Image 1 (cartoon, rainbow, N blue to C red):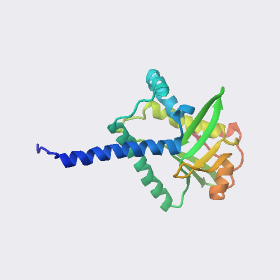
Image 2: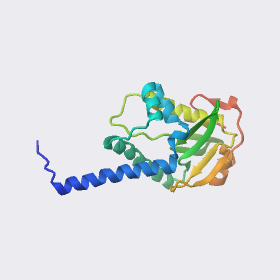
Image 3: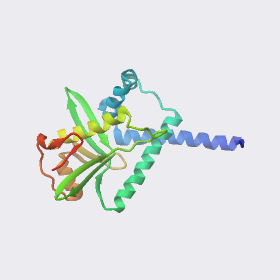
Length: 209
């Protein structure tokens, strides 16, 4: 096996890249997600499903992610950009990221959906959720945390469909639209008119109108 020799200049450059990536990741998280200490996110709930102790400790005293963890997360964000470009060239209507904000027993709950697609099939409006994950290896079945997160997103979307709980930020972290119903947001973004829905129209994996 060939041995890779890294000189001092290369080590210095690698060190700069590590620092830059950490700073960039922290800045982007604050812009798009705000202070994670001010609310409970679906990632917190999904993490609790796998390891309650770790989820609670992370919420009480967040631990700085190491470089490898940051790199895996950022790889997922870079992949999101590629998915977004693929959807754009097909002229598909999608929201990225869709923010849903509500309260449960006085506790703020906020969800950020990677992609929310709005389309039509056989004369009916269809809404689909696409969550992008970056993993070290591809599992045979979804992780428990991923399962809880996606189903939580679908549940919050349908439960709050008629409520002014939906917002959208730009790349600078500024709100483009805030506190609208999902139908109002889609009308402003795409000119699509979506009717209100009743809970009986929902089904376990999503919903059709």
